[in-house]
Length: 108
Image 1 (cartoon, rainbow, N blue to C red):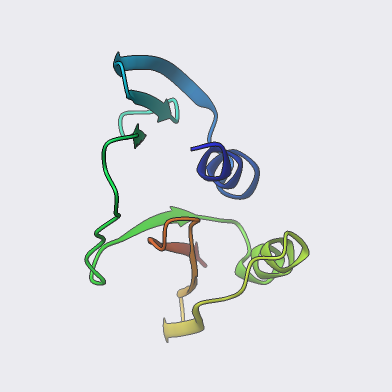
Image 2: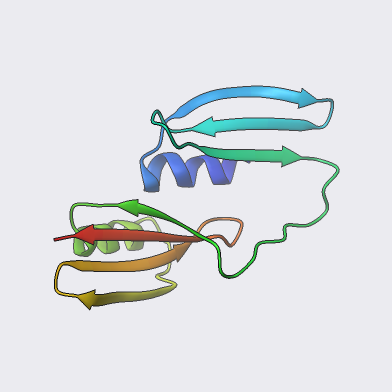
């Protein structure tokens, strides 16, 4: 949980909104202040993480070049990209601490 919190706070830029115990072996944390939030669940009784490879979360950034340099400074490898499928959009992916693809996208 703490590694994921650091990633989403320091790399993605989300703030912890709410944290609570959801049972004796489960903690839930919500990050973000808008309509859509990221929910992290730490369930001590869950022995594995199953993430479909087709799922990703996307976050808009001002500059993918600056964001790529920033994640590299944090010791995070670029999973794939950068891609520029159209002249007005560019993006790349990293993996969060649990292996979920995170997309950083620049709309030019």
